[in-house]
Amino acid sequence: MTSTLVKETSPQATAPVADRRRRARRRGRIVAALFVLPALLLLGALVVYPVLFSVGRSFFDASGNRFVGGDNYAEMFQDPATLKAIRNTVVWVVVAPALLTGLGLILAVLVEKVRWATAFKLLLFMPMAVSFLAAGIIFRLAYDEDPDKGVLNAAVVSVHDAFKGTSSYPTARARDGHGLTKSADGSYRTSATASPGHTVGLGLVGVLPGDLPRDAKPAYAAAGQQATSGELRGVVYLDFTPGGGGEQGKVDKAESGLPGMKVEAVRDDGETVASTTTAADGSFRFGDLDSGSSYALRLPESNFAPPYEGVSWLGPALVTPAIIGAYLWIWTGFAMVLIGAGLAALPRDALEAARMDGANEWQIFRRITVPLLAPVLTVVFVTLVINVMKVFDLVYIIAPGPVQEDATVLATQMWLVSFGGGNNQGLGSALGVLLLLLVVPAMVFNVRRFRRSQR
Image 1 (cartoon, helix red, strand yellow):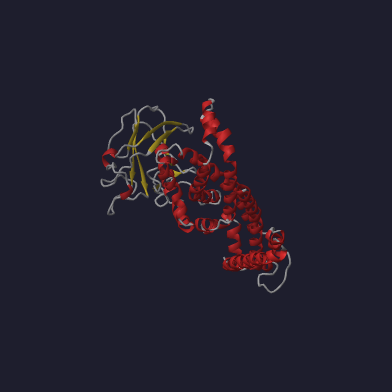
Image 2: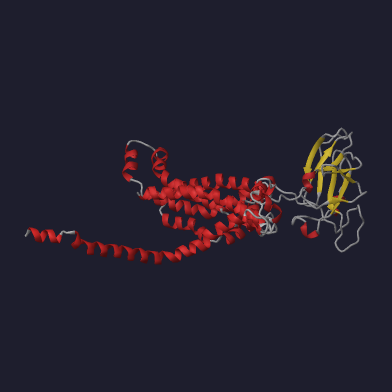
């Protein structure tokens, strides 16, 4: 019995079993390698080879024939356009991920209290389905400076005009040598003075009959009214007869008054003593003037101010914040959904215990929700940092040509230097290597974070 047990447990008996296990493991490795091989080939062709080629190409000149060592890297940090691209990239990295993470957190917390939470999340996440190209075209139109095209400027102009009003006669001007002279500030003033008891005609041109206010009436009757001894009368009219004819400097029967025009009476010492607004027929009157004095009549510059055109969203000063705004529109839903998933996994007993202890919602949010969500917020923030460093489409499409350099980031600068007219692929490759070096630390941090969370 003892000899039989010894035979069964001897190394000679277990050797075939170990060999079979080793052969099975070897076959498993071969099968796994065959499955992984296509992915490795694609990774090598699309990632590893381009990276290695770009690193090598960065040490050659624009033609690719002469080795220049680190000259491209030195030139990269001496070129003003590249330095501006680095500065704009820093602005993007500092501003966009922080705003997105904050907005995503706030929206994720608020959506939990909304009855139709799923529909609201779908609505906010929908811009992610729009390509950056389409989003860039949408916002390029939205940021257009023409209020008739750009929706943002249309809203800004509407609000501005509602509070400040707008001039009805931005193109109006006086005829030379017909009693009105233009001042340096854009206002018009009568060359001669007038005293109470007189009626003065102030003729202007440059207003198309179709641009007159709807309530405008003919000025002929108002021009014929005689002023009393204690008042100064006048009429502001369009010195133009439709169809031709008429006499310049004189109110003809077919000529229209200019309603809503502000008129001021100015004393000899330059002080404005009275102000009024013209009626529908262009008439005005001053009734409380000193009968023994004479006055000049002035049409202030506000009558001729050009219409408010809104904000230059795509000008050099605002183009980068404007593009970041478009980026926020696209990615806020992404941040909200990821943070919302982390919020759903929070232990509800901790939140309920805090409420039972008398904590208000702000205290719960600041001292419990945010600390528990810190790992999720970190992952979202770092992911957005990586994405922001590679932003290209929005900057290239939204920024107009004249301000392209003011909005450029490293990705667009790399393309412009290599293919967009610079034709210096050595310098472009150096920019690509710099961009890779900036992205790698964030990628490594994210990978380690994922591994730590899996453990």
